[in-house]
Image 1 (cartoon, helix red, strand yellow):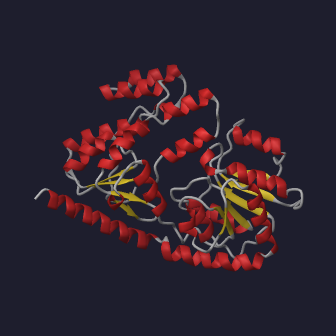
Image 2 (image 1 turned 180 degrees about the horizontal axis):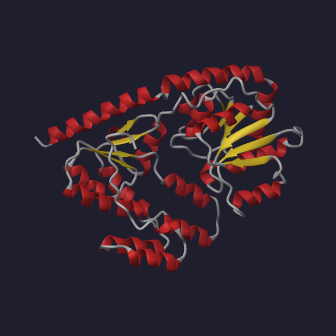
Image 3 (image 1 turned 90 degrees about the vertical axis):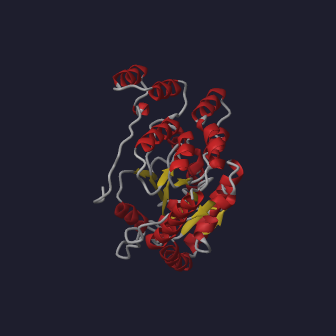
Length: 369
């Protein structure tokens, strides 16, 4: 924790640390003192919902009613009922990465099984709250123009209330390592296994096709494989267990070195509110193939190869094209590194945040004159 920054904990029950009813009941019973919001959190979790955003908003509201000595409050996407009362008493900004309606949509498309779809309906029930709250928030920051558009449509927010400020990147850690030799047919991607939104299936299917012609091809996945999950089963069915490797618990430097060893980076996401894997790969100077969807085109500019999402054949063709014309795409990747340095450095992003923060404080003062 940086010097001078205080951490004030507003602990919930943290019931998702276990899926045992007995353990969850024990957590609830041992909470001292218990409040009505704790009972709500316990019952909602048992019913398959994810109530933590709503309960956090309630606890934050209660804290700030008793401790209203802050210049500004910034909430990170709880978009909860409590935030509406908070913005009445203190300058307030809501950060919305992207509307979670997109996650819900892609998860429903992943399966037609009734029990699965019912479980997703219960889990995403917090969206009803967020759709009511978001249009009433006076100042929203989001990291991409695409997210601004999607928030205004899905949450029915006024676009003029939404400021677009890109996320920043540590360009001094995500760097090209010129002393590390690239492996000619090594591909790399960052993806959460079993999360439909990340589109990992399509990268796996592409590498299974390329395996026939490129005997030394392999794929590094920065992420964790769930035992006997969908991704694990798909890898086995495609018979690519020997060429797909998952890596977790890596530092930023470790990730940059993995990029340095790889010849091509792939981001096959179906949706990205702001695609960190995209700018990380570009900052490391590796040729990039990315899905032409959501925020990705505005982030990469002219410095990546874009393919239609879900199109395995287009992904295969793009990998082959880069492999066969590698020096050309290496030069594009070097220019992409400069693009990241100029547009996603923290100094630039910090200055943009400062402007919005000061303007929000000024508007709040003027509204209460």
